[in-house]
Length: 176
Ligand SMILES: CC(C)(COP(=O)(O)OP(=O)(O)OC[C@H]1O[C@@H](n2cnc3c(N)ncnc32)[C@H](O)[C@@H]1OP(=O)(O)O)[C@@H](O)C(=O)NCCC(=O)NCCS
Image (tube, rainbow, N blue to C red; front, side, top):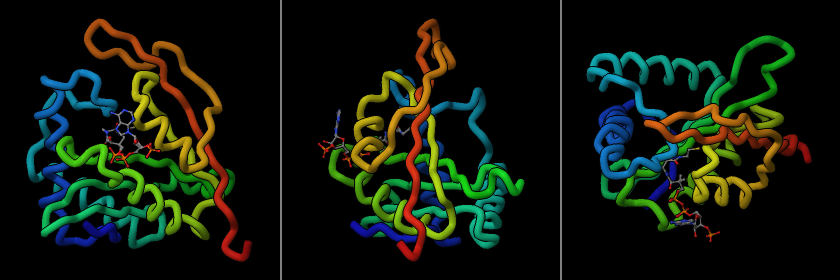
């Protein structure tokens, strides 16, 4: 298994990873990721992938993937929230590993690599995670994230409410 930066040729794997949410949710209602009401078309996915690539090329996104034998197993990404002078030092992180590949240290390696590549691009990284998502919170704490707030009942899946937990960590400056 290798962890590397995203390439244009990763589109099929990235689309499969995104579509896996729709397949997983019926059997895993605890999946800590939002699922759009409608499955996007492959064309819509391609448009989204193109926009992501543009952000990477312009230095506003860092994305890494885990790959084994040509199959994409997971992805972590940090993007610049907006370009305003007061906000552009901050990034937001998201991570997703395919269901069958979880609990084997892939999330760990993706976090190591994406945070390493963020040094010099971002000064702080924030994220939100659902209160029931213990596995993700544990991973984030291990990588220096601390909870900085909680929005009660921000998430509702079916009849179940969950809090949205906000976490952040500073990043070292390149010279440090
Ligand atoms: C959260 C996620 C990215 C973690 O990736 P992963 O590859 O499964 O994680 P790892 O195998 O690297 O393990 C990370 C830590 O979680 C622990 N862990 C593994 N399985 C666990 C479980 N069932 N419950 C709690 N912790 C668990 C590991 O032991 C490890 O901690 P430790 O080594 O310090 O003891 C992955 O599970 C995932 O994609 N989940 C669905 C999407 C999601 O929730 N994304 C985050 C949204 S905020």
